[in-house]
Image 1 (cartoon, rainbow, N blue to C red):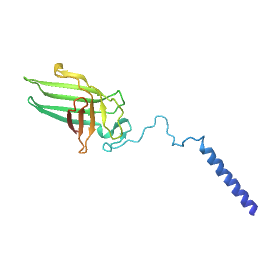
Image 2: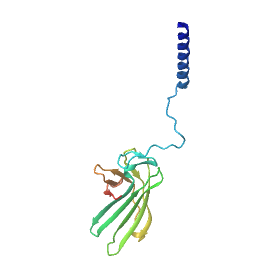
Image 3: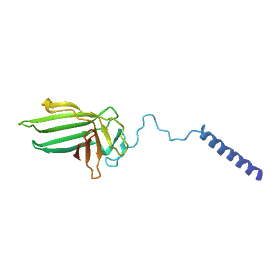
Image 4: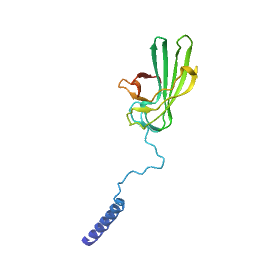
Length: 172
């Protein structure tokens, strides 16, 4: 009986050793296999993490609104940030307001993502281009900007050349 028990234990031990050696590979780190094209899990819009569609942190995505008051009057700025990768158009800005001397302007700008943001931002966008200009002479392409989520939930857009900033609030 003792010999049978020793034989069974030897076979079991040999099986375990073979399994361990087989799983060791050739010194490579063992990682969880994921299917090709698998995406990370989506995150909530406020947790500062990337969502499943791309590198822009989820908290930045969506519609934002801001305004500028000056001697000519009140102008609105509506900003939409969408997901994309470096080189993609991720920012659309609509600017409406009064013109000096009467009338009004309506401008729509687009800007591309210039660098992949960290999971908490900031988000860097390049020079904007004019997509719509009414009148075109009132709409001038903008310089590169940095988008930063502020602790109070608003969004700061800062011109990286001049330091000028405008704060936006989430509108959706």
